[in-house]
Every structure is written in structure tokens, then in C-alpha cells.
Image (cartoon, rainbow, N blue to C red; front, side, top):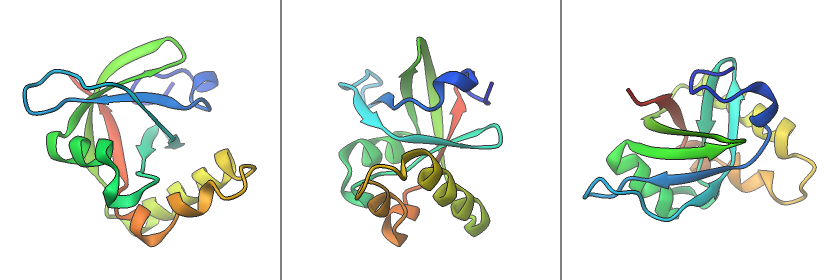
Length: 122
């Protein structure tokens, strides 16, 4: 189980994310691609800084994820550690590499700048 409480078998699935806008309510869900590094969960914007969900998540630092029957509120922390980003790149390649053309946008330098770590919100 990772730090957010998602069991190992479910972490390979895509995750629905609902960031919290200014009023604290949840917006409609967006499918995001989450990867793990150790017990940490990480996400990046496939559309780099143009991703609407990412801009809301970055600004509010809070949201809600649903995966494999687990629904939980999370907070987001920006990641600027090169070593962590290298491991996140590798995790995206391992998890989504069979999808031709899918991985390159999410491991680009611009996408690396959007790396967020998910933490359980208490």
C-alpha cells in the first residue's frame, strides 16, 4: 500500500482526479496518469503547464482521487528534485511505455516541471 492508501494491484490503473476550485467544491473528474516511486504517488500534466486540472491542483494544492474503489482526499506538493524526477520518468516508461506516443509528452522537460506528489489529506 502506498502513502495515500491505494493497494498495489490498483496503482496500475488510471486515476480520476477532481481538484478543488476556489470555493472548496470538487470539479468534474479528469483522468490522470499516476505512478509510484517507493511508497510515493506522483502525477504530471500530459499537457505540461497548459493542463487545466494541473493548474487548479497546483493553485489549490488539494483534490480528490478515485482508483480501484479507493476514494480519498489528497494534497499536492510540487517536486523539483532531479533524482525524484528521473525515477518518475522511469516509472512512466515502465507503466505506460507500451502506448506509442503516450510517454514522450509526460517525460518531457516541460512535463517534468509539473511533477506533483500526492499526500493523504487529513
